[in-house]
Length: 493
Image (cartoon, rainbow, N blue to C red; front, side, top):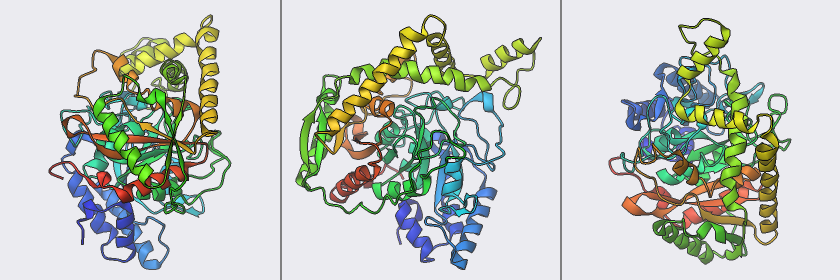
C-alpha cells in the first residue's frame, strides 16, 4: 500500500472506506509529519482534538453513516474561525482568540451544518497565512514567514502560503484557502499543487474573517483536480440565512463531469497575459501545457482582455477600501489584543491597533480610508468600481468566443524570501494575471504544468464563466491524466 502521506484525498477516502486503514492511523501519520512544524506551515495543532475527531470518524464508518470524505485529514487556513483551534488571521491583534463557533466551510467539511451531515473530514489544525490575507508571499504573517518546500530560501506565495506549503510538503492531503486577488491560485502555482477559487458566492463566507467582502472567496487546495472536485462539492452550497453574499444555487457534484472529452473545447488565449512582463521559463511551461490540451482535442482561440493592466490599480483601491471598514472592528474592546497602557478610549484604540496590526495591514487600512474620504470617494473608489464593471464586461465579450480562458498564474516562479521586503509594489505587480478574474467574480484555478528557473513549479491558470467551475475541473483533470507534473514532489518528502 502507498504510504499514507503520499495518498491523494480520493485515495485516502477509498482506503478509509474499505477499512484498509483507520482514521486514527491516518491522523496519527499526518500529525507525526507536522511535528516540529516544517516550513512554519502550522499556527495551531491540537493532537487531542484531531484524534478525537478521528475516533468519531471511525465510529461513523463502522456504523455505516460515514460522510463522503470521512476520516480524511484537512488543514484550515487561519482566517476560518474554529472552536477547537485558535484563530488569529496571522495577526497579533487576534492573539489567543478562540471562536465560539465554526465557519460554515469548516462545518461542511466536518460534521455538517444543522441537520445536514458534512463530509466528515478530520481537522489537523490551522495553517499560517499573510496577516488578514493581505500579501502575495506569506511574509506578512505576525508569526513568521512560511518557506517553500521546493526551495526553503523562497516564498510559497500568499496569502494562503501555509495551506500550499502544507499540501506540497505532504503535511496534509488538502487544505482550505481563501482567494481575494489570487491567494489560492498563486501559492498553488508556486508550490506545485492544484487549487481553485470558485465563482464568487458559491462557498459561504460565514465565519471567514473578512478582508475585502466583495472579493473574498473560499476554495480548496490539494494535489489533484479530482481532489479539488471532491472538496469543492463538500464546501459549496447556499447559506442564505448567514451569508448575504451567498448564491442561491443548489450544491453541485463537481466530480460528475471530470471524465468529459475536451474535443471541440475552445480555449481563449488573452494576448495581454503573454506580453513582455512574462518570464521566458514560465511561458515555455505554459506553451507546452497548451499544446497538450490541443492534442486532447481543444482549440486555442486568440482573445483580448484590454483592461488587464488596470486590474492592479482598481484592486488596490477597492480591496483596501473594504478592508478599512472590515478591520475597524478590531479595537481591543471585545476580543483579541488590547494595549496595556492607555489614558482613555481613543488612546486604547490607537495603541491597540498600532501594536496589533502589521505594516502591510496598516498600509492598506490607510490607503482604504484615504480613497473613501470626503473629496476622494468620487475620484478614486467610484471610478475603480466603474472600471471593475468594464473588466467584467471584457470577460463576457471574450466568453462569446471561447469556453474558458488559459494563461499564466504569475509572471515568474517563486522569488527569494525578503526579495521584495523594501518594495511592496513588487508584490502587488505579481498579481496582474489573477486580479481580473477576482474583480469579475469568476472561477479560476491553478494547475501544475512544469518547472522553471531553479526547478521551481509553474502553474497554468484556467478561468471560466460564472458557475462553470465544473468545466475548469474537467479540463484540469483531463490534463493531469495526460501528464505527471502534479505527481512531482520536493526532495526529501
